[in-house]
Length: 124
Image 1 (spheres, rainbow, N blue to C red):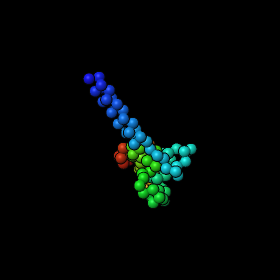
Image 2: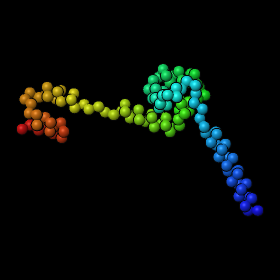
Image 3: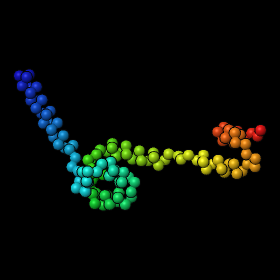
Image 4: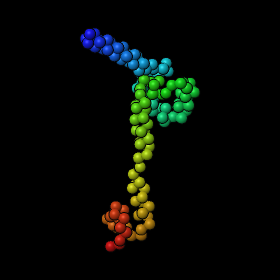
């Protein structure tokens, strides 16, 4: 009796898993070129307003990540990566040094460099 119950339970679990797997299979939309990296579509969607508008207008019932066969997690990671790349401060030292040097009549380079690093404006 117990053995039969276990078989039925196992059979039910297998059926549920098969349904879930079928449900999770993603249908890639027809505009997607299978030769292209699906992440390129995410990049365009995130970076290009016109592309994003086109996609949203033509596929209002889909997300870009589902359309190309990726997950929401993939989309979030890509968005973070691209956002962080834009927010990274650029090295302003090459621009600041000539301005600072032009304000000083007699430039002693070691003092200028030290003051820029430490913030100490002492004169020697």
